[in-house]
Structures are given as structure tokens and as C-alpha cells.
Length: 200
Length: 314
Image 1: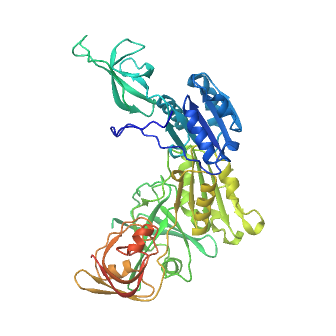
Image 2: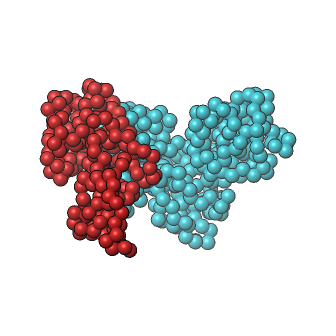
Image 3: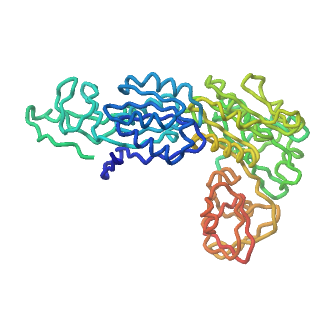
């Protein structure tokens, strides 16, 4: 799947530039699903990069694993979910030294959560690159019960935790790595707008 | 400028070239606290010329009893440091500005690495006190060519975080080793000669450090040069002598110009150029290369001029 292009949106909406190889620096790479394609293009742009790279991949049903592994990174690991990859990712950040570049590729949920982890570990924001690939499904936080609902593709959607019907806001929390959903029928209970597919 | 009239409480030679000055309020009042890396500008009435030099404060930022500075004598300079060394005695009254900080610690950092060369150790002395009080992780590296040039040695506390590199004794500072193994969230601060700052920037870039984690300060002395003249918007002509800065000449002519660091770093005295037939000798760190090439702005604190006419928007 090609790069995801966004229509111009509100200013708090993050945009993700294409990954560019940073010469000589050690690399930590984290990708999910179609994000693997962005890492393959990155490796093609600088073949020397993978020898310094620690790659963590979350296939999420995509078939890019063997291709990504074949790039010959210094370390390669697959995990079934971001939660399952978190301990390894945190350990890699703990061991990392200044100069390390973090490359993130894939869904906004992955980019947001991994960025929040990296910043909490002390990695400077300007050492993090990200590229959005694949689904435009959103990771949503319910502002009422604070529960996270993954892979939201419609507006409104039903909170997986408290069951409220939530309006999908463009408001993105960098701290949480998630968009925010607000009760859509608070003042007119039961009267709901027509469900639409989320556009980029 | 918002200055304090302070009494020179002590003058202590630290080395053949470096002297420490201690300033106290004449009535014993508490001086405003500052943050590590702050400087003051000392006014020196030198035979009709009012010199003003910026010096980093080296005393404890929270010790309101006194301000201390360390001044290195520059025998080939314009005379400010010679005035401090030869003319200033304990008991004298001098005008000293309130502290301003252009080189503060970034307190979001997880760790601070301070790299000083020569007299560039001065801003770090107050930062050491601040970091110790904050219990923040840090390391300090002080580099000098020879032990006799390392005047800062006697000012540095004996702490395990303080590392001294004397190149003549074979332990030259290895920037690659210092910057190559720092934990995430480390910020680096450099003060000293231009060559040291450039070396830290180059090494950090090679190792992949982002720019936002790098900080430096280099105050420049206004360089002497050949005399020149500037024209003001009113048509008035001001002559600038060989050992005088444009800013000093403007001040002597009672033309108001705002200023802060007087060393080409802070940008406060930026002045628009209305017309320029000739070449502005930009010596500052403030203007971008494009702005310097355009010759439409000048920093009167350190810049000079060669050519036919320079008209300032003053």
C-alpha cells in the first residue's frame, strides 16, 4: 500500500514525513502491517543502515515479515501486538545512547504510542521520524471513561468500554498517542447522526 | 540599562592572567538571584571612555550576598580587562547590570554534559552549584592546553563529575568518547573558543545527535580595526575610533541603542541599515549568513565597516 496522504486538517493533527536515512547513527525501527514497506524503502535508500538497526515488526496480518527479515538488520524481532512488543521496545530505549534515531512506520496508533514511549524514555522529539502507512483507522480515547478503542473506522463509533456513542474528533493527544472521542448524543439521547466512514 | 551600584568587596588573583572580583551591595542588601550561565555587564569609566564588558557570574546563583566574576587579562584587547586588572581595587564602586541569562540549563534534560575550554569555564561554575542543588546528573569536562593556562582549575570543586583534560600532559579531550556514550535525554553545553564549539557541533552531528540537544555560548570581544564613520537618519555623522566599537561610539554621542550582551550573541542591539556603500564586517553570531550578505542589518556591539558610506536607521 502506498504512502497515506492526508487532506489539510486542523493544526493539532500530526503529519508524518517520509522516512529519511540518518547517516552513521544507530537505528531503532518499529513498524506494523504495511509500515514494513516504508522500512524496506528506507533500507534501499541507505543499504548501510540495516547493519546498525534493531527492527521490531508487528505483522498484524500483513505478509511482509520474511521480506523485512531478509534486509539483514543487526536485530530483528516480531511481535503479535504493540502491547507484546512494548517490553522489548522499552529495553531498547533504556539501552540506547544519544544519537540513536527512531524510525516508526505504519498506523497512527503505532506511531502515537511508540512516540509517547520514546519521549518518556528521554529520546528527543527531533530524533524521531515517522511515516504513516496502511489503514487510516484511528486509535480513540473516550474522554468520558478514558478507555482506548483501537481500529476505529467510522464516525460516530461505540466506545468498546462504556458503550457511549462517540463523535470522532481530529484532536490528537501526543501524550496518549490517540485521538479523542466525545459523546455525540449527550443533549439529545438516542438521536444519532448517520454513521460515516472516517476519511483521512 | 537597569544597573546596580555595587562595591568591589575583594580582588583575588587566580592565576597570572585571571583575577576574581567580588561585588557586594554597599548597604548589605541582598542581590537578585540568578540562574547558572547568567552574565552581568560591568561599566568601566576609563579616562573618558565608558567601557562595558559582559562577564559570566561564577558565584552560587542563590547566594544573594555577592556576585563574583573571573576576568582574564587580554593584553592585546581594547582595554576593558586591563582596566579591571590594573585599576579596580577593593572598595571601589562600579555599576553592574542585573543578571541576564543567554545560556541557561535546559531543565527538561535527563543529564547535562558541560564542556568548557579556557576562560569558557566561567558560566559552568554557577551551573555546577545549580546542578548540585537540583541533584541532576551531570558531568563537566574542562580542557586547556597546559596546566598553567588552566586558571579555572582552582575555581573548580573537587567532585567526581569534574574531568580535567590537559593536552600537554597527554590527556587531550576526546569528544567522540564523551558524546558517544551518553544516555537518552542528555543535553550538551559548550563554552570556549570557536574551535571547541565547532568541534563539539561536528562530533555531535557525526554521532547523530539532534541540534536541539546542543547549546553553546561564545561572547566575542568587539575587535579593534581601522577607523570608520556612520551616518544617522538625521544626517549626523559619527566617527568610530580604531579601539572603539560602533556601539560605544553611538553611546558616546548619546544616541540611544538598546543592548544586552555586547558580544554579538543576543540580538538586542540589531539595527537596520538604510544605505550601505561598502562592506559591513559582521562579527556577530546573531544574523544569519543571508542577513549578513544582504547588508541591511548590523550588530553595533561587534561589527565594523569599511567603504564609502554606511547610513543607519537611528
